Image (cartoon, rainbow, N blue to C red; front, side, top):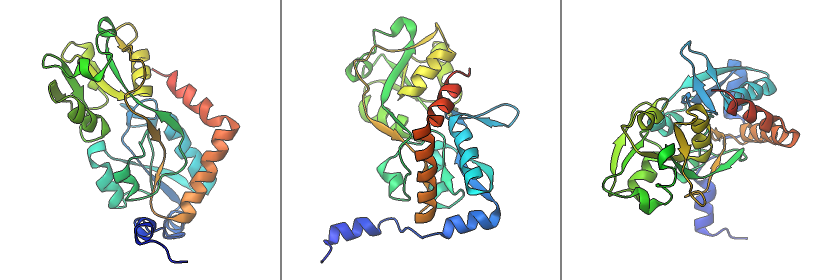
Length: 254
């Protein structure tokens, strides 16, 4: 049977080098995990240098399942794609969204969380920013973190608003709390968790539904055997309820 040219191109877009990366992991004795460390509840780098979060716990469990230790490789959202292409790590974890430009460079494992973008604002404004149109106004100050899907979404949907790029994702929500910005649109789980952290100050706005649909998953270097191993681990964690327990525990942390 002749394979159509367009299908053949898609199949060849990301070569799956069977076992190459997994062999390197085993030879090295460590799984290199790229993570930004600035996205609660998935990944957060503490002042003492330690890294915590639901995906950090999952990374440790995955490394154990592979029979190796874990090595966390710091990256930033604006540099994540380039660092992945440069093979600075074997897998990216920490609330990474499955996006086409990323998937073109390497496969994503099975989805661990389905989400969508929603606004977060001062609690007094929770009924004010309930649509894209209500945010896309000249007087509205929108804040974003640089170089990832939040900035891309804001630039595409809020051209009339005053857009400020805050360089530190770990403190970007403080801009709203301090009154220097009005609203941020980010992943729903981050909205809910930051509202929990800034209880009484920041709130999810009363949108009828998320603005988008997105999937969180682990981004794997092109290696069919490694992808299978990651999928098997994820499937076991999901089916046993361990992943939900891990996520719930991370969500309960300030």
